[in-house]
Image (tube, rainbow, N blue to C red; front, side, top):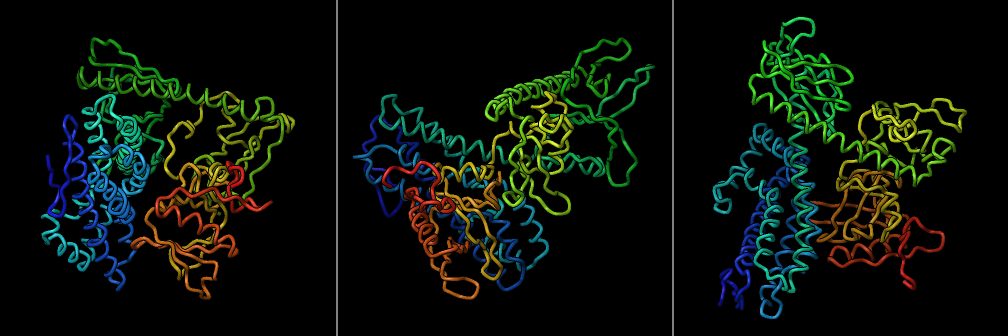
Length: 580
């Protein structure tokens, strides 16, 4: 039968017994999606950027709202959609889509940046629509056009957040209808795994933003006195409840806030600006127990006991009591599981470092100028509030919070020395400090520079800037072998987190005209409104980078660059094929 997808083209598909509906739906929804990405990138963003150039409002506001939508639009309009359309035109000879999706699905990771920025984008949009009449007028004018379909900018901006889970759903339906022995099954299943990971990453980013929003609300409710706004803190349950006195039969109304690692027992305090509470006690989840109790005078009671405090509590109903008990039990169970996982991981780390030598041999210290952020919590250093400290056990450079532990080290005559929290756990066997972040999944930027540099297509120092009127910053640039179409920018070679990543696919590579600000060893990457300026130390280093980047921007996998003898600062450190 003949299936028409547009007024310009039609494809004759022999789809007997084949899940054609899902393939057609994928192509049709992709076309509609690219149209809306064009609206976001080339209409809304372009018009607002042009007006910002006149000084009406800051251009940073526009960048903050639209994030990396330009990269997303380029990927879909120049790579994914054309690939699907070409395949559909060849369907009689090549009836499969799994191979295309498997090749391009890894680029869906770029959605993580957009999703993470979404809440901030909505706040900026609302703020500037109220603050700037011209800003608001441009948006209202575009929204009134037929291309917008009577929908708001906010509605269109939500679509990229929902797109990756949509791919996951379509591909799952496609696989359900695909015969077990179909040649496309292997690649389609591989694609689904990659897309599911990207969808999980997007959903995780959404949940993190929602959790931080809740933490901010609680922070304000506690009068800004408690340091709880931390991504490692997850709100589990909160609410009012009665606390029974230990010495008599009286009760008082309190407010409980249960996190994944602690319980806050709060009491009301006077306030003219809404409900406010003071934290009476913090009870750690480690070692916590919850028991159902029986009290003839007070029904629906249960007891929560921890190292710091034991509380006998009375819920408002039997259902409310069950909900609290389940919340406590689940939180305690997850905390214990993570604890056991961390203990096992700690043992593995000790094995790698050598159990016999940790604390017995003075470590090699990582130099201060090799890192720009704490090697444990990944917060950037600054000379006033977050200075550099060295762990005397492993030599890592950490901030004051992550080095606020002491353990006796044999190599220093068993004197107490400042150590990082991971070494503290290993050396003392105690687990009474805050749980380390090592059990958490890494974000897209949380890949150590030394790790990827050691197995890279190309790495080295370049000067970098996004504005040619401003001075360049010296950064450590890496194109990893496992992610050869992405450029990672670090502040220093030993940093544990990248400052940013540039998905190279779709960028244009250009020579920069020689000037006082930009010597002949400069080049730039341009994509829509995103421009990155780079300057190499020598012409040879520049050509080496251009050779790799020019392949990556068109979707080809660049070859590993073999450095000259003794030059590991701009070349592949491992995995260089013989004779390459």
